[in-house]
Length: 156
Image 1 (cartoon, rainbow, N blue to C red):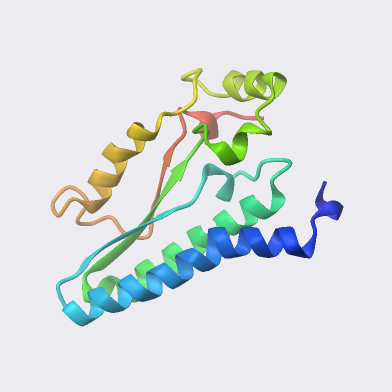
Image 2 (tube, rainbow, N blue to C red):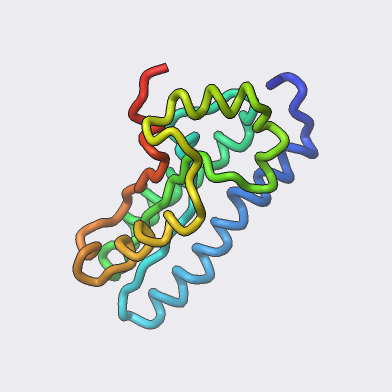
C-alpha cells in the first residue's frame, strides 16, 4: 500500500531506476556530444510509466520519470544528432517481479494481454535494433516503443 512505502524503499528504487539512468545519460551524452558524430541512447522504462500498475507505486513513478527524461534529452540533444528513445517493456518475468506474480495475478495479466503470454527477453532485441538503426530509426527520437503483447491497448 502507498502509505506503507518507507523512505528507504523509495530511495532504493529511485537510485536503481532513475538516478542510474540520469548518470548514465550524463556520461554517454557527454561522450556523444564531444565526439560530434551523433549517436543513440536507449533508456528502459516500462509500460507502467504510462499506465501505472497497482502495488508498485514507486516503480511506476520512477519509470515515468525516465520516460520524461528521455523526451527532454531527445529535444535537447537532437541538434547534435543524438537520438534518445525508450523501450517500454510489458510483463517480462524477472527475479524482481516473481514475488508479486501469484497465480491469480498471472491470470489477470494474461486476461488483459491479447497475445496471452509473457514476453521473452529476446523479444526486446528487434525493437532495440530498430531504435539504433541509422536508416530505419533515423527520424525517431523522444519516443517510447512499447513491447507488451498488446496489454496497453486493452481497457481496464
